[in-house]
Each structure stands twice: as structure tokens, then as C-alpha cells.
Image (tube, rainbow, N blue to C red; front, side, top):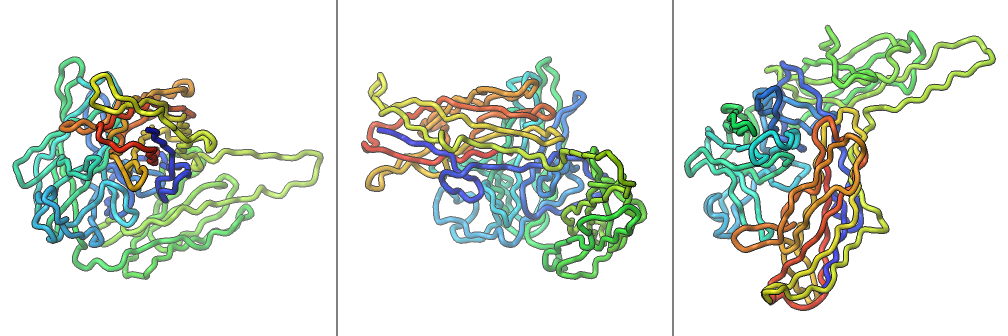
Length: 489
């Protein structure tokens, strides 16, 4: 019995494609900036440790570059498009009667909805006992029930937090974890979810974030209209020194909102700087050589000083001042730090894994086979060095002859680091055993292949893993194939 595993693209799920993830370096948000997040990826519960203290932040990856925010400044919006009916399946009865309506942010990304998760990838090993922290849902306030749950390789629910059967609910989260779940809400309206993280240091000291409130809006606020997009017009391809630059922020559709702020970021800077005194739809200034390659964005605010829309950045290019002809030349070369990216790839000519024919184990109760994952390369060229986590999952069953299948959960792995750059700090993910009844396991769920901590991820690393297949003896004979999805974030 052979099993074949191939990498494929994450966004389009096309067999044979290579996954590319682009994550900008996170920067600190303005203290006064309040935002509503309704689409894209965000580490809603971002656990951080510094100077002996635990804290909870929001790593907002819905913008580029990513921004670290205070939970008090963020409202997580569950759009009306998240509505769905409770499945007619007794395993999901905890969500309500079959056919009743809930609003669900799914654990796999939907580009039209928010994709929140929890994150401990900035936490270092050997700091906390058992290399883990305890995440608690302490309280839920709102018009309905709230449940966070994942699913096993057979689609069955695994409840992580449930607000209607007694709180607090607690889970242990290992360091270097980046995880997502289904977030289910039973009614429209405003919710406050109170989370807390506790940990015991290796010296025996217990530390805690204390309770931290997170605001969720299910549906739309009264008076909400169409989603607003913002763009900046007026930037020419190139300016001569002392030319006048006039930029204009354009709303689509046009609304009555008229409060703006303009921000700039020049080469060498990691954070956006507010431009003093510029609160209108237009911003004019003089092009000088010192501003060459600076970026500009506009932000639109509502009456509560909450960001309603953010434009894409535009870049200013300023020519050199004319000089008298001579016998010299000036040559300028640059590497734009904003173009850095995080890329996960496999050799297109070396991405098929063929496991040896499975043999009965010594106990005679399982078909088993072992092999090696083909090398996976992760390259991080981002200037901010935010760290990264590479994961793998087989989302669909292995398929065999005449429609026969078996669960991807019966395949496990033992990750290892094959190579890495000097000072890169890459560590292998934990071993994932094949599925065992009553304890789960296997690659039917997302599993970490390797990760790099904050400030130590830049460079190129190569990851691998030993593969182990363990099947029930009743599995039909034949050759089965499945596709492994690789992601880096």
C-alpha cells in the first residue's frame, strides 16, 4: 500500500503549486487609534512576555505592515455574511437547534470574513514550566451564546471555550503556537469576551495578564452603510526638486465623513509618522531630494475618531538636481526594506513522497509505513524580523481505488530543522502522532513544522520531517494519494 504526499498552494488549493505567505513587519499602533476589523487575518489573542510580565495584544495583519494594537482599541466585527444554519448533525447540538441561525467566523480563512486566532510565537522556550501558558475565557457579556471550537480529522467538534455552560474555560497553549478556531455567536449585537493568560516561570513564579476585555460586534451598527474604501490620487511617476506635490484622498462611495490624517514613512523608518496639521482630504508639499522613496497613506475617521478606511501607500520619487556635464557618473543602488517577504517553497522537481508498502506491525493490529517529507524551504527577508511559523495540514482524506478513502489523521510526523542561517533561531515543531481513538492526532489538523522567534527569523531555513502512517487492518488494499498544504505566517 503506497501513499503519496504533495505540496500545494494555500490560497487556490491547486495541486503542485507552492505556498507563498507575505506578512509585513508589525509596528506599534498610535495610542489614540481605534479600529474596527472585519476582514482578513488577525491574532486577536496575541500573548507577549517582556520584563517579567505577560500581556495580551492584537497583532493586526489586516493592514500592511502589520500593527500591534491594544485590545481596548479594537472592535472585531462579525459581518452579516457570516450567518449560517446549525447543521442537522447531533454533534453540533451545542450550537442550537438544527436549522437555527448562528454567525460563524470559520477556522479556515474566508477572505470575505475576519480570521481571528491566538498566537504564542513570540514566546521563547525554557521560560515557562512545560513551555506552555494557560489561556482562559473568564466571562462573556452579550445578547447570545459564544462558543470557540476546532474540528478533528473526521469533522467532529472539539470545544475550546463555551460561554453558556459555566466559565472560566481553560486551555493550555504551548509556546510557538499559532492557532485558529471556529468562533460561533448565536445572536446579533455587541459582545464583550474577557480573556486571561497565566503562566508559571521555570523559577516557580506565577504571572498573569489579569482579565482583558475584547469587543465583538455581530452584524452591523445602527447607521452602518456600505463599506468605504479609500485611495490616494495625484502622485506622479517622478518629480523634479522643488516641484509641488498635491495628494488627494478619495472615498468610494463618497460619504459625509471628512476627518482625515496623513502619515509618512521614509527609508530606514519602521513606523508611520503622523504629519502635523494635515486633517483634510488634500495634502500639498514641496518635493525635495531628501524625501525620495518616502511613502504616504491617508486614513479616514468617523465621528468617534475610529478609523473607517485606510488607503494603500503611494511612493514619492524625486529626481536628482541637474548638474553640469562632467567626466563623472553617479550610480545609486538600494534595497527597499518594504519589499521583504516571507516565502515557503518546495523544489518543484522534488515534492512527491512515496511511502514504502505498508506492513503489519509486530502486534498484527495496524498497517504501518514510514518515510521522509521532502525538504521545505522558508525564506524571510522582512526587515522587522517579526518571526514566523510554518505549518502543514492534509485537509482532505487519502483517496484510493474505487472511491476508497482513509482519514489524513492516520499520518503523523516528527519535524526537524535541516539547515538554517547563523543566529536564525529556528526550532522544529512538536511531534504529531497518527490518529488514535480517544486522543486525536495526525495531520488532518494543522500542525507546526517549524518556527522562528521574534528578532531571529530573518534568513533561509530548511525543514523536514519523518512521516509515519498507521492504519486499521480493515483498510482496503490499494494505492492512496493525498495533498499536503504548507503555509507560513
